[in-house]
Length: 357
Image (cartoon, rainbow, N blue to C red; front, side, top):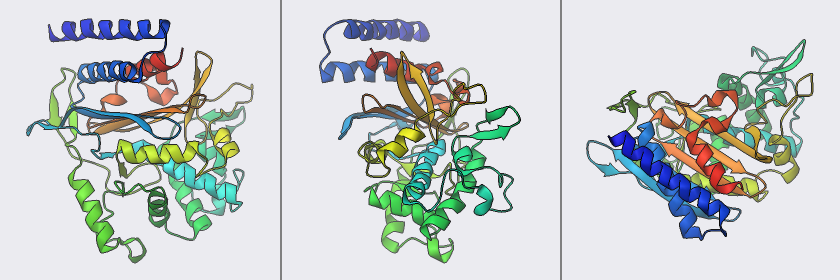
């Protein structure tokens, strides 16, 4: 009965969304109320205990909302500024740092990975191929999504900036004013190598942020949530960032405003490579890239199975970005996002359906 009731409500909200598209543009409050209602319905259907969401425009965060529980047992509600593990979305910051090196002329997209990590299995691949998740074959470029390959990029950044990867990552967060973010769950630990040990003030700040992390959950097919534990323990090229929707909005805004990368560099990152037949492959540099109703969509997701998930979708033509963070894997687990089609996600579909006319 509960599921039937949810489906009825979902249909009502969907009808409202369609009506809003056909009528004159709705007010901001109407649009965000519809978006929030639908996201919460989808969250409940997916069994996600708690979720935070934000929509970012070209100059500011336009809307943020929290749904469900940060911790079920204590009935502690999720908050807009709750920090989450970003999992695979960490690669977006790593990608930006690599492309900054390209902009500065300290590396190129055609530079072999072997220049920075001679013993890497990817030594013959180029920086650009690792970023686009492509591999050269006899038949041209082939796409395979493999986040482990991105670890090679740490050495590119270290060579470019003359800093350890964590130092460079931390410098980027601080430059953008992302002071509610942590460069890895182990960032406050004094056991890190000397160059990576945080100052007492930063270590205290990191600990206070980590204390606010939501309880992670595994959710069964019957939507029963069981407490689990975080599995990511350090900062990597593709995992380890801990942040909030508000802080990550600062990163998104810096990209849109050209504060991190040249506009032509970002445009190149948000373009599809092609195979030998001239057909587009699904992954640009750091982001998946596709079209919806003839409009470009760039996006990326993160998942830690039975722990957490995240999804970021940007519509470049509109300078609009959706950020979703959850304390279960429900944002990504039900959808085969690894294939490169974000429309298989019901969360993405409602966003695109409401925004793209």
